[in-house]
Length: 258
Image 1 (cartoon, rainbow, N blue to C red):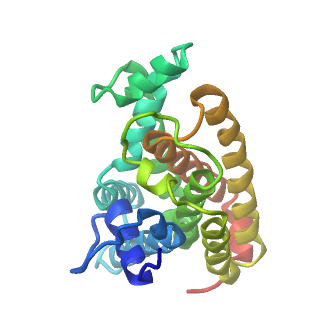
Image 2: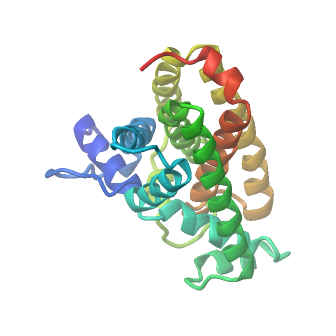
């Protein structure tokens, strides 16, 4: 089925962000997959622009406060969609039955494991943002957001849908092809190109993490779901943010000037 690429782009933004524009989405939602890293890069651009505006304020920058602002903006722009998936996954890992794990993830309530996972992840992101801001390295968020969304495509195109019924992730898994996987990674690597060798290192590390998580999804759930995709996105994102923040001197040596 032929689809208009613009409709796929619109579907990607409407799925991953609150950003949208008038128009009709593609009936084949899997056509949005090649655009996932683009949507991620635009999210990163919004957050980076927010920090640049903060630096223009006529007083000494408060990096910790600005980090809170970036954190809140990120949650708002994504509707907290991936965080919800992470919480559901964390609640499910205590169960030994695949069916029970899927049932727990479908439950709208949040448990103790989910709360702990959210607190730890948001705290780690806040610390990473603060260090990146104080070191002038926040530009790395541009490709981190793109890479994490591209890794979702990696899972969607290489795993079956785990549930027997409907779910948010099913329309993307049905019709997904290895061609979409290839295009998504190529687009993401093009975004990494201006960042030099370390941009490709981040992409490679993300791919390793994603493939490890893919094995866990296959063994523990029998495939992928929307919640597991959100979990993968958050895991990749927070690990790459933390690495960039921790090795800020190394990364700044390879970064380009924007």
